[in-house]
Image (cartoon, rainbow, N blue to C red; front, side, top):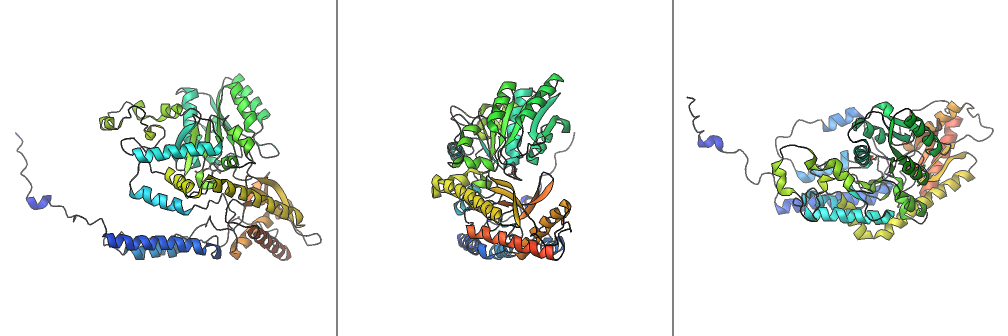
Length: 512
Ligand SMILES: Cc1ncc(COP(=O)(O)O)c(C=O)c1O
């Protein structure tokens, strides 16, 4: 017989943890909290005077931050100061009025506070039992988003980290709905201008590289429905199984919008799922100009929209919406898997309770919806519509200035607050004639403008040529800011041309 182990001495059971240790006094919390808010407000107040971009080299940051694990307590307020002064500003200040890079969100103050509250209340809109209040906030924010975008009743979904996970979630539902667990011969379609998260989603869903067909776009950078129809027919004839199309509503490079209406008809005819990736561009539907888009969006089966882009939310705020939310549930509900999860039974939904964790890949989920909820309640929807309109008007202003300037050439017209253009040397200047040299000149100009520190403008490629790109969606940007960045472009272009630098091909990396 194995002897019972002797009971440990009482001292061994004593925890080294002192109750209350992982906490602060109310006075300390208020002191640090005031400091945090002060740091945020100072940042916002001084933003326009700052540079839109700052970067440090890896060695400098290693020296600053690669510290040993802190065993001893530190001073919270001093740590907040350190982060705000030395660490967090190292990056792109997307909300800077002269930051035109990528898709620059601004965030907004109520949304910052929403993140604080959601975090501090440990809000989880997962199961109704776990977070009924947070769940109801998310459902309300989803219905407001549906209303803002003009989607028909019945659409639903959930907030996710961003467009990438929204695309993944929607395509998982499409896969399960159409392929019933068998990926053999399956085909998914998009244009080469689709966001890379579409390819990543395909990969995560188990599709091989040749099961994602990326078609070359037409002259306007849009998915060509005729080419797509021909390809779907050919694939069907070859015994393959087309199941879904991704239409991009606002390609990241040029803001091109794939022809949703035609694609919806095509998908309907062929029995394909149509996913609209409107991470950036769906917000156009808030405006009068976006009325045709309002009608078209509702013809898709699913939609990605990123409130952390053109709805002015801080990261992370993405959203996936589907025409038939029960299809999300079919893919993601916990009970689908035959595992021994008795501990989840108390959280099962009854009656009209909703467990949002049954609709997506996460169980514990943060209350991302609160940002949008609180900012819509604080500012009102009309302010959001005006702000989106403002971005469109700024882009028109930029296009007019570019068209008027003899040394600037518009390459792609404003679309969803994005345009592309080139600097070209004035006639008579020792201009580098080769297209490659002109490509190099755009990179040189971008680097010089970023190094100047008053504006941030990056490059992209359109039809194989390098171009400068502006995304003008910041509601705090004024026409004068557009004039400033174009003036800086011309000045940098002239200087580079005079120095014969046009031929030097840059790597497009901004200066600091
Ligand atoms: C069209 C489009 N789809 C998807 C994404 C990915 O979104 P996220 O970065 O929020 O994951 C982006 C990001 O720029 C985008 O522009």
